[in-house]
Image (tube, rainbow, N blue to C red):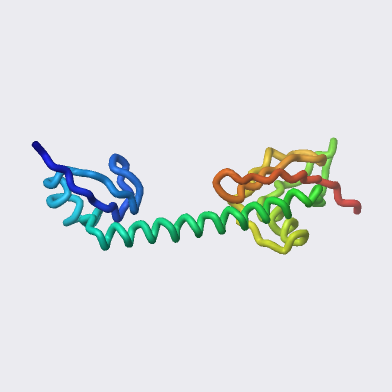
Length: 154
């Protein structure tokens, strides 16, 4: 006849759950491991109220971030294509690579927002032509932009 107690997690644990989640655990597990190692704290009326308030604030922040991400996605979609000029050799092969940094600088010229180069996924670009690049804004919001690689006229 074990009675479980409620614990609010201070850290994310793989088997228990995310930070801020309220879980039912055995008293021995709570008092001998979770609470001394500051992984969780005992759930009282005050701490439950505090945890719910923090969860509400977190949800509001996520909504604001999603709204801003949608606005950024709209701006990126409005760009029909960006062009980058590179030196070319035989059969329109380009010298060197087109880096994500070059792409972010070109996008900055159009919309005035600096993107992180880690957000951009490009295919392997070896020739001049038009390529489709993906920009990951947040979790499930992605924008596709056409990248035109042009030869430099000497």
